Image (cartoon, rainbow, N blue to C red; front, side):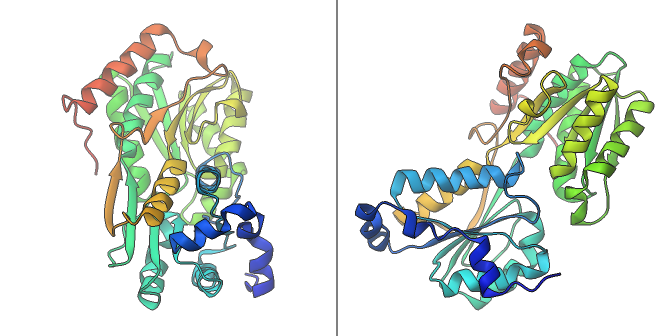
Length: 332
């Protein structure tokens, strides 16, 4: 992997403090913070998790005038270097995107005890780390309801990037929601690969999708990062339906994407940065679900014709039951 030199780090970052309105720069100093955002490996504008984090940082800057340093390691092995470079530039608060940074963050947090770290999608037990996790199973339950009711074959599928506990939460919720709506539904489960590279392999994602279609699936839930692009294309070519993840991916293939299971990374990032600025940031675990508006399903002009009123009402009934505690979505 290429070495992350200081020059390359600077090329990968936005020195947005310089771009902030001059009249607001004193506000950043008064707040006593200099935030940084470390993206997951892959593409920044991925129409998914990273792009959501970007929008959260942009919203924070728009609301406060405080610029956010941004950086994206090209591999997990470059994470410590990337964080160290941000800290050398004065970062006091670092938001980290991606479950696979959990192990290196535990070591980096020990080396920088005065820096506040927030990791999204993993739990790191350190006194200077806040861990933000989502109740993916709750949002996945709702899209499972929609998938089962949209299926004509009675077989649906889940395609994950790799077999990890995080994606098993998606699978559990998806299967439970599907059976809630249609007890006889069959769910196929496959993965793109066995390493984080599987999140960035659209060609293999398409192959896995075609395999599920051959076995009867006519709606597939894609939880595979930018590998989703291949899954969506395969669904379009086969005349089947797909479900997006993390951000609203409906516009990527209108008429093919039944809905998208939303994980509000933008809100997680924005809330963490505001809490650090306001002095309310605390370490520990924060778990966000339907009740907090942190997971959901997307309805817009691109997929509304695919959703009947009865399908939407079934999903909304499930939402209310989960929030009120009448349905508990079990996780592995």
